[in-house]
Amino acid sequence: MKFEIMRHRLIDGLNDVMKAISSKTTMPILTGIKIEVTEEGLRLTGSDSDITIQTLIKVEENGEQVIRVIEEGSIVVQARMFNEIVRKLPTNDVEIEVNEQFKTHIRSGKSEFHINGFDASEYPLLPEIQDDRQFSMPADLLKSIVRETVFAISTSESRPILTGVHWQVKNGELICVATDSHRLARRKTTLEQMPEGEYSVVIPGKSLTELSKIIGDSSVPVHIVMTNQQVLFKTSDVSFYSRLIEGTYPDTSRLIPNEFNTNVTIDGKALFQAIDRASLLAREERNNIVRFTSLEGNVVEISSSSAEIGKVEEEIQTTLIEGEELKVSFSAKYMMDALKAVGGQDVMVKFTGSMRPFIINSVHDDAVLQLIVPVRT
Image (cartoon, rainbow, N blue to C red):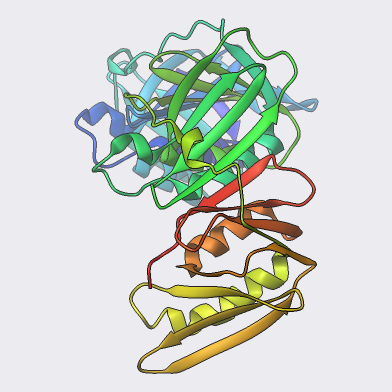
């Protein structure tokens, strides 16, 4: 195998696949990156067996030659070392050559590295995925869905199913839900050409976070294929495979109340900033609790106190308060996460009582719904 490549494009490709490399793997070959060169271009593959990322650097891009293929072939090289070497090479022109004993020679300017490679045939094959359950969405929408849900997953391994986001296709709609049992985030979206039928998968939160870093903010379509054990997200040059979490996700629709005793319409940004200020004192107490109290004249009071430091109270004018008077306590962090997900716009906060879960959504639409369980004080 022998080829020449522009160093900056090789670094771009490595940035993607390195996100799937883990030093804690039971398969030594997975500490490596698989490099394949064909007439089409250079394919790089990285995997930790949960996530597999493959990226293609084409021979020509925008009329510019990026790669010159002299001899096709494949090799696996130690990922971290190869990545470090490529980043520190002195020029933008890189030549890589592999001999029959898997010795890999990397040349750039007057610098030359010789590293040991491994037989590419020992690298695990990519999962086989039939694309009968395929749909697509713009990359920026996919990124929004991840941002609006993934923060609410559980970080505890005691219930592995809750460390993922539940993606459900139903009646032509995609519903994504995450919960750690103290809060819940839900995002609904309607896409064109959704596949027939109902099905659902639970995608690890970690996978979605890494995917979000790779796909960027463009509106290019991302093709999504779901099977029973894997999900594939595919753009024109990157394929991102993730294993799914096995098990049945709890029925969260029962948790979301339909009737409310108190509805508050308020500027989400002003509420966020008031809670942020109140949490300065709340943070000093272990539980970071802030109180929300409805007052007369469409005013709410945000307050918190610390036995050692003191207390803070702040009044905010709301657009409207309907229903019963209310005093409720909650985690400042959970509320700020929820408001961030809904976006800095007018929000409705709907309460069923001081100890029942309450929901937050935008006044303009209910595509994004956040639910929080209050705290007893």
